Structures are given as C-alpha cells and as structure tokens.
Amino acid sequence: MGQLRLAVVQVVAAVGAAIALTYTARTFRLSRRGQVTDRFTKALERLTSSEAYVRIGGVLAMEQIVQDAPDQGDHAARVLNAFVRRHAPAAAATALEAAQLPKKPEEHVQEALRALTAKRPWRVGRRRPVDLSGLHLKGAGLQGAQLRGALLKGAVLIGVDLRGATLKGADLSGADLTRADLSTARGLSEAQVLRAHSLRGCSLPEALAARSEVASRVGASE
Image (cartoon, rainbow, N blue to C red; front, side, top):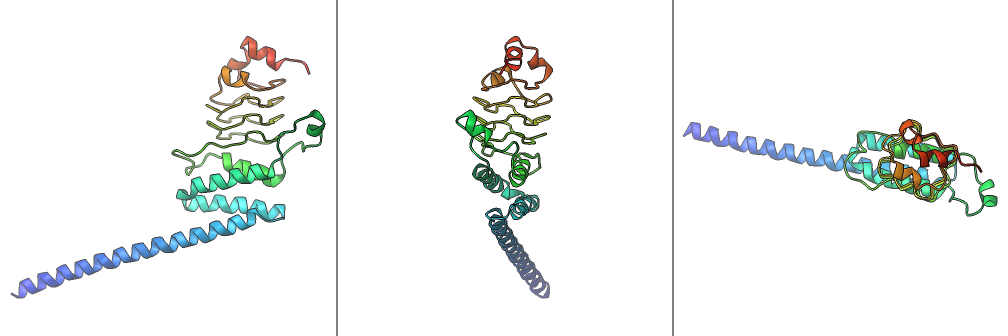
C-alpha cells in the first residue's frame, strides 16, 4: 500500500511539473511575442519620421527584429518594400522630367533597398517578390542583391550596380538598363535582357554580351 501511495505521489508530481513547464513555456512565448510586436511598432514609427536619419534607424531596427525573430521576415519585407515604393520617385514620363530626378537614391531609400534585397537566413521559403516596378532608381547600389523573380518592369536602373545580383526570373520588361553593371549578375537569360527598354552601354555577362542581338542593343547609339 505504501508503494502504491508513493507511485501515485510521484505521478501527480510529474504531471504537476509538466503542467508548470507547459505554462512557463507558454508565458515565455507570449512575452516574447509581445516584445517583438512592441519593437515592430517602434520600428514602424521610425520609418514614418520626417527625419531621414530616423528613417534609416527604422530600417536597421527592422533588420535586427528579423534577425532575432525570423518568423517576422515576410512582414518586414512587405514593410520595407512599401517604404521604398513610397520614398523612391516614380519613373519620369518625359526626358525633361527625368532630368529633374535624383542621380542616385536618397540614403534612407538606398538603405532600405539593401536590407530588402540582402541575402539572409530569414529570406527563405515562399514569399512575395520584391516589387520595384516603375521606380526611378538611377545610380542605386544593388551589389549582390537577391532579386529572384523581382518585378522590375519599367524601372529606371541607369548606372545601377548589379554585380553579383541574382536575377533569375526577374521581370525586366521596359526597364532602362543604360550603363548598368550586370557583368557578374546571375540567372540572366537572353530573353530577359531583350525585354528591357534600353541596354545601351550596359555591362553583361560574357556569354550574354556575345549574342548578336544583345550586342547590337548594348552598342546602340543615343
């Protein structure tokens, strides 16, 4: 009888410990989720600031949140993409309008582009493609950018540094790649680059640059 009592006590103690452990783990998860939500909200507030340096801080804060909580990667990417679309000017409709647009992105836009297209562990799995279509991004630095399947239709990418960028499946229809450097870009096909509006003076991987139709477009005069 004494052994039975001892066994019952041990079982009850084990069940109690399991319940306590489950409760503690749940409390920890809820607390952590609350902290992430709070940090996300503060990062969003910085991104909407009227001061450029505060907006840069918001981009960096968003990056740090995702490094600590990878499950927030898709949310952060959506926010940063919206941020770029809001702050980068639209491609000009005329040459006169184009002459009045910046020769390179503002610093907070460039920083957001870097974070949005950077290769990191949290940028895995299915997620919506980067959408830079119709934007004026002349002179942007996109070295090593992860732009697989990106929407670049009608984007102004004059003089953009895309060395080492991954562009497999990216939509370059109507994009202006004048003097852009794609010399070491990965995943490009002839069909992709020929859909661009301009390839004048563009640096392309040797295999592509050697194609006759591509070469004629690259060497086209003004």
